[in-house]
Length: 169
Ligand code: AR6
Image 1 (cartoon, protein in one colour):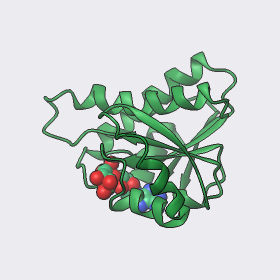
Image 2 (cartoon, rainbow, N blue to C red):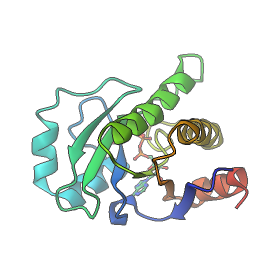
Image 3 (cartoon, protein in one colour):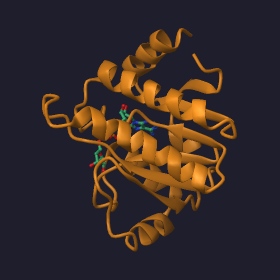
Image 4 (tube, helix red, strand yellow):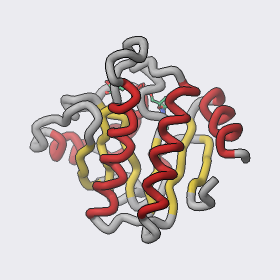
């Protein structure tokens, strides 16, 4: 597995990467889970900037500043709601990861921390989501030698164990 892929267990709002990724919804106006935690830690400037963005399609991402967060940028990625797997969820989840990484590269950001997008309220099976996330990040890194590292930040124990196994850590 690519040595530029890192694994951490904890709270992504504490991570001083070039950008942290938010598991947002299409409104980009906040919510629960990691989205709520990021907005609370960033402060009201983040929501004010998000209001100017006009939302975001599922499978895509948009960039804002990080405000009071240790990371200078937040990339708001919108993963799919799990509907049994026949609604294009896999391509949409891969798209959310890929769009976030493309945005980072376009903005000269060299380290990106991801939460486990769609595996909370959106109900995507955690092991299936881990496979998509790792494959998408790995393919991206193969084509982007300038990206220093991508960190998977797992909040819950289940996700952390699944990533340890898949990354061989
Ligand atoms: N740091 C890192 N990961 C976290 C944190 C944290 N502080 N808090 C939770 N997680 P979810 P989704 C993990 O539900 O499934 C929101 O309301 C959590 O363990 O946050 O993509 C949005 O506004 C889980 O593995 O996001 C959307 O409406 C992962 O983050 C909707 O939820 C994702 O869980 C998006 O649902």
